[in-house]
Each structure stands twice: as C-alpha cells, then as structure tokens.
Amino acid sequence: MPLNKPVTFETTFTCYTGTDIIGEGGAGHIYRAVDDAGNVRAIKLLRYERAKGEKAKRFKNEVLFCSKNQHPNIITVIEHGIFTEGKRLSPFYVMPLYKSSLKALITTGIPRDKVLFYFGQILDGVEAAHFQQVIHRDLKPENVLYDEQQDRLLLADFGIAHFEEEALYTSVETSPDTRLANFLYAAPEQRNRGTTVDHHADIYALGLILNEMFTNQVPLGTGYKTIGSVASDFSYLDNMVSTMLHQSAEERPASIEVIKRELIGRKQEFITRQRLSELKQTVVPVTDLDDPLIVDPPRLVDIDVESGVLILLFHRSVNPKWQQAWIQMGRTSSISYLMHKGPEQFSFSGNRASIPAREDEMQRIVNDFKTWIPMANSTYAAMVLREKQELENQQRRQLQQEIEEQEQRRRILTSVRI
Image (cartoon, rainbow, N blue to C red; front, side):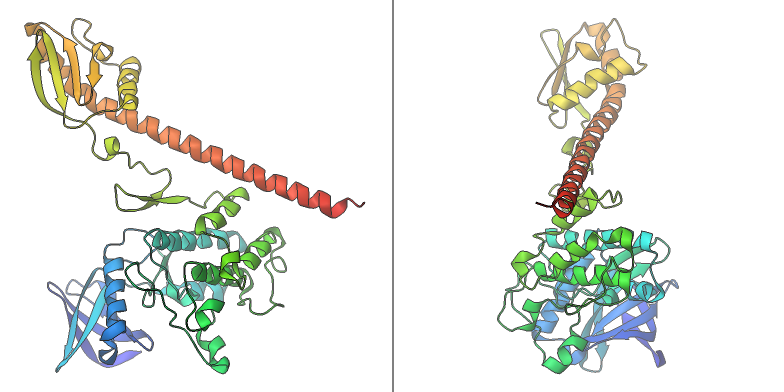
C-alpha cells in the first residue's frame, strides 16, 4: 500500500525512505524503503505501543539473532535503529527485500519435482535455528520468503521465537471460533496455556507445510488430502507427514536430522546434512572443512639451529595427518630440492620440523620449505575433504539400504498370508 507521505528511517550511517507498507500485523509494519545509494530494502518497524516489555525483548532477540546470522536459509538483518515520531520511539530493523514467499509459490503451484528441493531448504533453515537453541514457533508459508534470483527460501519473522535465554511459555491461546483462522499452523500444545512448547512445535508446522506444498491445502482434521492422492511417486511422504502431525509432541520426529535421514534414505540427493561448527560459530554442512589446520593453515614463523640440525618453527602444531600430507605432497608433486634434502627427510614434533644440514645448505632448505608448506596445506585439505565426502556417501548408502529393507519387509508382510 503506497504511503501518502514518505517515512524516513535513520541509522548511524544510512538514511532510508519508506514508500509503501508491504506487510502488517499486530506488532507492527513492514515497509518498502530505499537507501541513500538507491538500494531497495525492507524495514520492519515495531509499533510504539508494542515497543515495551515482552514485545520489545522479543524484537531485540530477533534483531540480535538475525544480525549475526550467516545461514543462507535465514534472513539477515543489515542494520537497525530507532524511529522517532515526536516523543514516540519505535525500534526497527533493515533487511533485504524479497518480493515473493512460499505462500505465493504454493498459490501458483510448485512443480512436483521441486517440492522437496524447496522443503530441504526450509529444513536447513529450521535446523540451523534449532542448533543455536532458537525455536521459531510461527512457521507458515507467509513467513518463508523467496529469493527469485537465487531460487532460495529463507525463514523470516522470528518475532515470537523462543531464544535460549528466555523461559519457555505458551503465548498462543484463542477462542474456538478464531483459533483456526489465526493459528492455522500452531501445534496442539501451542493452543493451551501452561503447556511446554519446544522444537516439536516447529516439526508439526513443517508437516503441515510439506503436505500443503504438494496439495495446496493445509491438512487439518482426519480427512485431509494426502500427498499420495495428488503425487503417487511421493506417497511415501504421507507416513512422514502423519508422524510429524502427531497430537503428542513426543511422538513426532525427535529432530530435523531424523526427517532428513528419511529423505536421504529415499535418495533425495539435494537434502543436506548439517552440524554446528564450534570453530566457526555457525551452522555448516557436515562436509564443511572447518578443521583448524585448514581454517588457519600452518606457516613458518621462525628458525633455530641445534648441533647441526636446522629447526623450522610453525605458528601452530601439526597433526599426524598433516605430516602424512607433507610426505604425500613430496611424492606426488614436481618439486626440486638441494642435495636430496626432500620433504621426506624432515622430522616433525608439535610445531617443529627438523633436518640435519650444513651451514651452506640452510638458506636453500628454508627457501624450499617455505615453497612446500602451501602445497602440503592444499594436500591436507584435499585429504580431509575426501575423507568427509567418503564418510557422508557411506552413511547415505546405509540409510538408503535401511529404507529399502524396510520397504521390502512391508511388502512381504502385506502380500504374504498365513
């Protein structure tokens, strides 16, 4: 909705001009805005009357979480500020503007062979939040934005999310006649005050969303339209959806990983397994190279001499696998060296490499050593990546075999009569 008069939002370094309201709810408005450089952004403004107490705390948590977010399937807050209107102060934050959403994709119809491609992205975003002890609690197609340029979905609106530092409590309770309209994707435990709400509520909403992505209908009650009725090749998903929609939270899948394992077992190759990297302090694919020796590779920082032995000092210790990469690099690379002082002649201990040498050899050895270090680092990274990929492929094959065995058992028990 175009504004009669543009609204100005100022941060420390940037001025934004709001031209349209593109979304609104009980807590505030979403504006389309343009910055000083002409970049189009979205601005979420918390209403003045809501900018206090619990609402303000939740808005702050949302800003902090999304500001440090690095995951591709969760929105990133660019910056934030305070909107001033007379004596009224209201917080706002700035994010990229996405012109579409999962809701729009569902309305126009998602090709059957792309549903799990998109659903996998949603799983990645929710799992990344869960890894960081954040429960969304308001998952629905409207809160999943679509980046048309990158064909990518992103989770948005963490306004009622549970963050680690909060005490769990239930914020959703409605009258019977409005409950369905206002909280269509709320889990049963979210509808009764005093009930603990945890990550299982997100899994319930994901079950609704997955079914809707195929059928264009939210699966409510017992006679809902199943995935198998509209896409027989994906009928195996109906059991998964049924489990995700269990009335008892404890009977739903224990985690996003459990859902992913089922999909991987069905040979959905684009489903990505993730983990929380303590080193990078973010969520990464399980095959991500966050090994300390790859993130901060060994480099030469000093030398010493003891009794005719040249000692070369790294800035950090190297492990046996890196030493193996050093030897392998020497065997497979076309390198030159002096007087047979090749890579295999060095001994390693902690952050020290040593080799017997005459005084007239030492400068050339140091020069060669400095040349070989990056080569060994590259060899080490390739070895680690290959091992991670082999392990991941092995686990995927095992999951697929387990699913095939389960399907075979089901077929036998269904067809064989006593």
